[in-house]
Image (cartoon, rainbow over the protein chains, first blue to last red):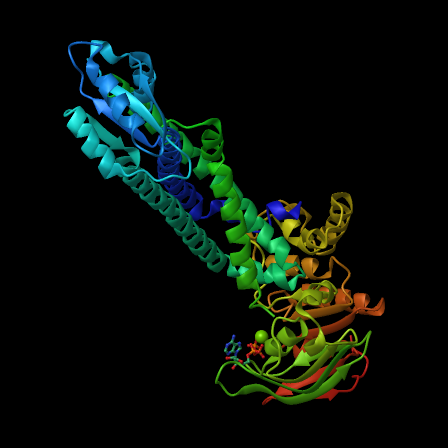
Length: 290
Length: 226
Ligand SMILES: Nc1ncnc2c1ncn2[C@@H]1O[C@H](COP(=O)(O)OP(=O)(O)OP(=O)(O)O)[C@@H](O)[C@H]1O
Ligand SMILES: [Mg+2]
């Protein structure tokens, strides 16, 4: 096959340059993408825990069962729009904390506040102020936690950060496109005479482009795999450090299988992008020949 | 085969190299393209091997009006043209054999057939001992012979040779011109640019004389003296 050899592309200076630059880009893209995907998972978990609208929290008391719970239920019974209220046991309270503190967290003998989960009647709005006033009259240290109040901004912030991370990935993609355009153009200029010879001998543009595409594909794969390996290495390193720190309060950014598959396909994406961009660059340059 | 009608050519803003040139090369003809250095011989050939479009005028080749031929149909026309470039234009990273085989490979001819043709031509131009050499180590005359072999290997119907004997000794120059004459005998239309008057007069072929932007077509010459 003539496609392999009629241009001496594999001796090019881009031979070394392009795989490394693509490797670096895939590395950075993999980190940003892993972060974005992990954050997405965390956002989903937070949103799930969003189910009930209100929680009434009674600070941990030394006496496990106290009259405060009864008093709260009495107040709630008089407020319109409330469908029901359930006092959570210690295990259920721990379960609620899991999205934040990790699955293995057992409370460690900490005194936990008493949580009363309040369900609203669907479609009705609750007079939150009236509830607060009545409650504080009956049980002064009860706190009403409306999840909307603090979870929503948190999710919104995380969402913004995630969007930024995706934007970073897109920018890296653009930079990769520019790099391939540049290296392909350099290579085209270096082999101008040979290309003109092929052209005048009756080679179709696609035949000439194929040789550059093949080169870009190899460079893209080589660089992509290098970058992914670097990213994987960094992940293992960070995971080890994190495990040693045992910092369960950090939101966990674990990846689901889909996320992992997306990351694993980055080298293919890089190679595919490089191939397409190289082809288009060559075809555009050749179209200037008569 | 080749028809120029009021063709003009200029490079950028420089004076015209060809001015309102009209001529017709019949299928199966053989023309020596003569004229002083810088007169425009290479430029004229470039128009014929489709490396440039004229600034003005119409060129018809193989019965096709080039200005009306879509770009993607030009490679098929180019495959019917063999070119010997004045500066050889060999690919230095390929061996002599692969250089000669290039037109066949581009045309997608099977390897077995390619090898057969290349072997035959190598013998023809006397370079069998350099089959696997890279062009960089060849003398200019040897390079020129590789270029000639490459130009004829695909049995072109139009052979355009730009000073193909400029670097050859008189004997070899004569032999290769005889080779072109033989190809011409079996139907190849040939245009051969040359400075070598004493070589040209040995053949009974017509001339295209180019000077000051004008091309004049000369008739057949008298048979050679020997
Ligand atoms: N690519 C180019 N750009 C600008 N001017 C050019 C170009 N090619 C040729 N010319 C000019 O066109 C004129 C004709 O050049 P050309 O090479 O066709 O002459 P020639 O008859 O082949 O000469 P020689 O016998 O020395 O090979 C010259 O004046 C040359 O400077
Ligand atoms: Mg010339």
